[in-house]
Image (cartoon, helix red, strand yellow):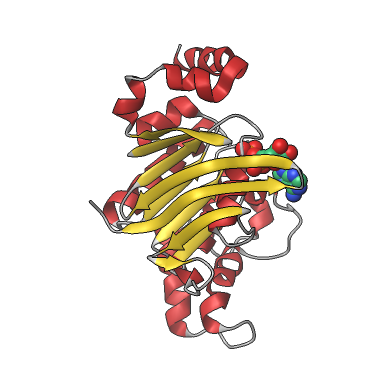
Length: 255
Ligand code: ADP
């Protein structure tokens, strides 16, 4: 068993009177590639925001890298690619390498100079995501899939141990989705990065991840994709009436 990087105990959360998470217990271990799935409004983004320290749980305990989240300061260990990275302002006047450099501001301080070693890191990271030749290009000139890889590069340039991605494949073409999962494989297998990926595409996710979580306010499943395949009723419980829609879509994608 790997070292626990995230330990969530009896977590509940409400926005006002709207209860969004109920009694969630979850441990994420080092080296896992965890897929988090659930219907719209099931609390996935809220759970991520709590893990990132942006929202406080109404009830429950969270530990990050073994430390209670209230005392955790080592945020450099966690990278995050938000949903908004996809709907990025296309007029933004910055080059690819400048955008990736902003991922280093946490470690170098906003107004200090970028050193050669930082430039090297940026270059190395762009090579890793397959965008080295685009480093001087304005980001607005890139395709949606390429822009997405720039934002992944920005999140990993400071070499976090854990990378969290919120619906990163929404609105990108099939080839980019393929490249995205290839990159995730590299980060997870070759670099040993622990990954948490929120996705609506349950068919794709179950093929790629090592662990799966089905959430709809409560946690309905946590286990390997193989275990998931043996428990089909989980889908019904998690998605309710949306289930037929999801399986239908998946069926269409396969055919
Ligand atoms: P998901 O990411 O699974 O789509 P969210 O965590 O975004 O789900 O939302 C869960 C529920 O919380 C939804 O009912 C949503 O309307 C509500 N919600 C999300 N963000 C806020 C907010 N800032 N204020 C109030 N309610 C919110």
